[in-house]
Length: 235
Image (cartoon, rainbow, N blue to C red; front, side, top):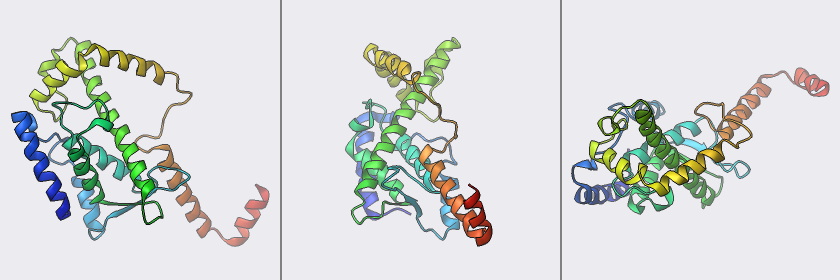
């Protein structure tokens, strides 16, 4: 389900893309089933938006729907962000594309922080989008490097779901740019300095922690009062 205001954002946005980039303006998606599982999940819940919380102490998407919200946000980024004239960070992405991406995500998820203004939600969503945009950019570069390492012509094998013209643009204008390559090398060195590695799959640390907390609360509710009291005394 899409809000009418979303339609006013999307239509002029895609018209501008068609005028500026020609045949390479086709939407980039993982395949014909992209987003279908989420649509079915929402339909199973009577078409209601899925609730995601943003606690002040975590400043991140939390709860059982957090991963789905983040995944959908990434899908919309890959779908609506233009490649030609590629922005090197989320900060510089076209404002109309940003509005389309965020509105599409809000059409499916009710992201709340417990206040009427939801200012924290806006800040956290923007930060999450920035990280997802960066991941997308890194994945495309990784695909390019793998092709070169395997001695395969990178122009002949575009990133999955990407139009050939867009892929050629990325190689010529982004991946081969010496300034960008220098920044990538520096970023790779910095990542090696991390004191820990993320081992929770698609779930972020805050998401995993919030789900564990919900599970723990459920266990406590199902635990007989006497046993719970004795356990707390032993601990």
